[in-house]
Image (cartoon, rainbow, N blue to C red; front, side, top):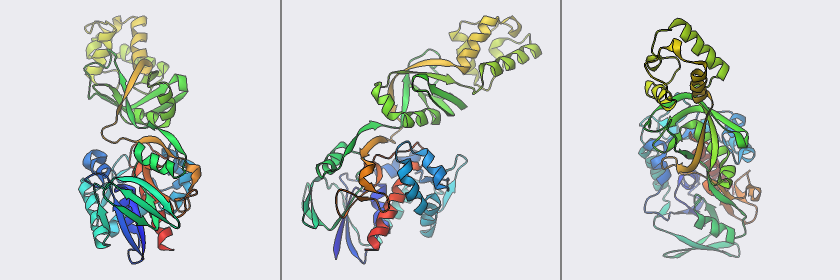
Length: 400
């Protein structure tokens, strides 16, 4: 019986193992940590954001800054609808939330982890934790996998290690080209009086642009202790990951907190002034922002909160509107988004056959997951790429 060694006990490794035909192969999973499926555990705040309810492959690939062209054929064969069906066949109920993210009904990532552990147990798959791969040596038709404790022989290797620099070095030493790693999902560190002491304040729909890069994104925005986060920031950080690394995370952004043009905002302000001339500016609810944020704008502009709206000068009004619609802020660094560390970079996609995720450089060697130069915005997309790639590998091996 031929032996498959899966290197990496994460999402791609376990999904692949769960779909392999155990009557054909002896299967071993090697994981360097003491626990498997660590990213699955912390994903979605411990609820596990399994996938995203986007069932058209052409639409789905729009969420992948790197790998979108290559993933089209992959998603044509296995997409989020197939993921949902796979789990439902194993009596795991999934739900689609309002923002289209897919979670287990249990709201616990442990449900997903247990499903995988049950699958590999049923198939008698050997899971070796604390098994650090030091080197892989090609030996004729086979591979010798040298770990910290033993040498193992593989007829086929599935390389699903995630994007650790050490694992990339190993695959590079076997002949693969590696695109340098840079962080992909991160929040922006900003020191500015307007954001000070407002951590937790959110905006339902904001627009964020980086004028220098001629790029913009929109979506919910959140003020944090360090600066700004939320989907609008995470999307722009993913799409511009490589450019932002080049400028060492020092750049200017422009934020429109209310997604209105200056002219639209001025019209709203003037209409409010006309209807409520005697109201004090500090107590006026003119725009869809929190009272704390509104008063912070007035405070930073040194506008008296007790001043009547009718007495706000044209200059003061313009300053308020600019703070709301086109506030320039200097970003001076980045922070990892929660524990969901995602990177751009990895194995060059030109060296992968996306029909079955096999290496074009190495025979009987498959590569899947974050070790590839593929990454996505937040929302379950990175996991979906893992499930789809791993499924293709299992299908290919099952037909051999």
